[in-house]
Length: 370
Image (cartoon, rainbow, N blue to C red):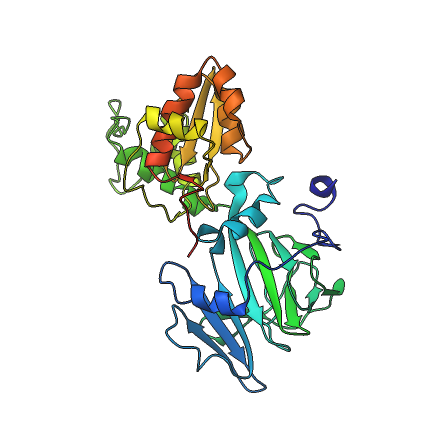
């Protein structure tokens, strides 16, 4: 019902979407993450006279904790298993559309101002309360109170609500909104991506960087003399367009596109001691568990009996054991009994031994969140 009635159509408040929600992070731990150079963080501070934006990573918070301040950290799901698990609650949206989890802490009265996002977002309220106003899409005059801050002029609201712990607000792209903390609060922003045409052209870079010999040169063996050498005939333009279209229709372009869509800038670290397939199987039989590294959301396609898997720009393929593989790719559990009963056990072990050695899957008994 949500997808048919609300997704990319209109905002909605989902009261107590998480009825027993408990914060897995507080402002102190968020401040610790804001010191990490691998995460994008910023602080937004305002008073009656001005707005200020300070980019992380931070060595000190002395200049931040003043007036009405908000601390925001992007991509927390890449370093925090519970944050990654929160993203999984929204996996009714395809993985390739999911971006990352931003967590913010705001003191009472703080916010980032009225603004418009070009992407879908679910705003999950953690501890504290925040008042959200959402307006209709349309012409909204941009305002730039700071070079790093893009806002809009005040707008009329169609939703005016105070979110409490466990509530969720969904906002489609281009709907203006503003959130003001009505008490010190933590907010979790589940963001999505919608590639624009310019970013899609990166798939050509990946395609041609592989030196697969599919790049063609323009040719015109039927060229005729023309009166003005500067004139470009429409037939030439059409031929160049057809040359591009032919590349888009090449079977390998789809793979390059999916490689690009699978890129997540994961923070992976291969194990110090690489596993053999026998060692991997032994650990499974001993009850040890292997899971995706936080924020890893593989995508895959099915065609002609082939399962093509894409993780962080890498391509893997399977012709057997596909049901078990798809379960694992989706974060579901495969038991050792299911594996032992599979006729394609060896292919399964080969794939996940490789994924573990690359750091995409981790042994949960050995993994520690710091």
